[in-house]
Length: 225
Image (tube, rainbow, N blue to C red; front, side):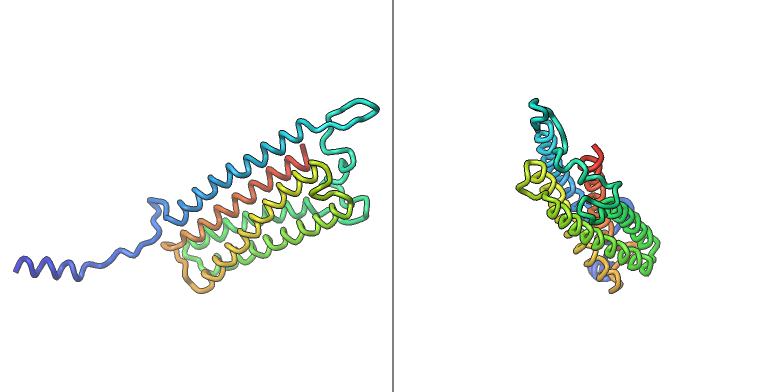
């Protein structure tokens, strides 16, 4: 009789389907943190290469080798506070930066919404974030077209190589983040997230915050320093 009672208890015991706990880190979040750690090392290598090239770059001015950066040919081209370039095209890099920072805020609003079990708030916030991310990519593509028209390209001195390498890799990461946001938005509209099950939402938000921070560093290094 004791054995039968134990077996019955085993059969009727409820399974624990909780996938998100405030007391620990879910697998998607942990995996994303590890991935971001590897990406930090990747971009650190790119930044190190950039500063190494920048420190060793010289131009002959008035017969004297002088350290200048950026090269004099592009000195006025990368000023984000000027509305136009020499060709008359709009310089939209500063608005693009503001848009990306704003998208990070809307992404976090979506995370806070699903933590309150507000599915509609999640989908609205991530929809806005997705639109802002796509807008940033379009503005960056326009910026590339302007720079190429002005004569700056991958083969135009080491400055052009480093500029397009840094911003190009970041743009690729933003594109990956846009795809991730689209998947989260689709799943959110399907009602697959709740206050207890939203690890994927948090993982996507961590990645998006990461690409935002990287761009702030790139903007500061390439345009302000």
